[in-house]
Length: 253
Image (cartoon, helix red, strand yellow):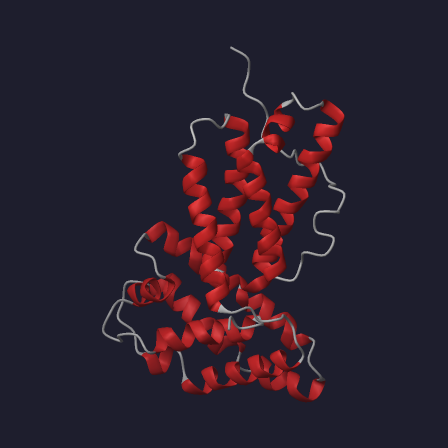
């Protein structure tokens, strides 16, 4: 199961890093754990990993006073791996100094404590893998569909790419990150379908909504929402805000 809180997710990442080769560059150890060989992608992913720290801190601050100080004392040791990556990412490292067993144990206990309060409902890795496969397949199909107009392609690719990104990084963002991407996509479909009512079936929204590719896209979103337990009312929401459902139309030639 995917860990259900930021402390557990961070603990699992650090445990994998700690088992890495202490004679290798620390950056390379992180790259192997995070599954990337691209330096720019690695830096961006590490920034996402670093975002777990303030999430963990906010959970610590919400604990009862009797246990709060215990975990506050370990915060610096949990931040150390991020600092080492930032200032000495290419240097060799000593695992017992960079990620101490005591700090790792405390992080694991905090994760267990947060899990007991059901911060998030876990989702299985197999479910995530199957869903990601479907999303990737649809992205490939949309990319190769020459019959799609540019607006429709951009609309679906924008949302599918975001969902795929969050599914791949679910060990960092957790189910909440996927839910956010799915929620945006669901709201965008509502906005597009409402626009058809206002603008008619021959509008660019009408062309999108009436296409077979869109219906497959919508079905995929519904299935994904069910997996993450957000199907109820997801497509009945009224789209709000100022974000357009589709990118602006290209200028007329």
